[in-house]
Length: 116
Length: 114
Image (cartoon, helix red, strand yellow):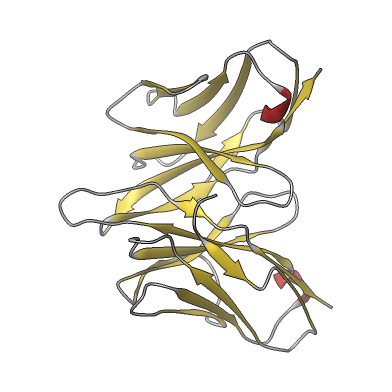
């Protein structure tokens, strides 16, 4: 177990709705990254949060947004859900240090989102 | 955009044999590479990583080889066991402000035959 938790485990939403997914990072980690994994594909980077600020973004539209809180937990929000948003959403936590780039990302079990 | 890809989508090996999973990457600026194992219904699990200033790194039963000249990465699993059955992803990254964004390939499914 990585110590990274995600909620909920599964979620079913209707097209056009909004969804919020949550992630608690491993103790001591200050960076959270979110990934979307479609069935049969590798995870795709959505964005990353470092010390409560967005620190890089992948090729996802603005309706994908996020937050990181002072305790380094994070939320992923998706507005105006589309059928293609159905996927496993993974968060990964890591520790970035100014003097030594840490690189291991520890993944949570994911949230399975189904959009109907 | 640039991406990481895999040569083979599936690999079947006999229990006890060695497994080799290959991966090609295209981003010449990448300086960090990781292999992840993903079992059904679970998130990716870190296996082993390597930085671009190395060409080989060994772990427990696993070895990662990096050939920067041809942008090729491989994962070798010694004495493959049934518990090794999973999808294996390689990922590459370029350091960004103290942390790394990973670009994953599509994955190779490893099936171990008892």
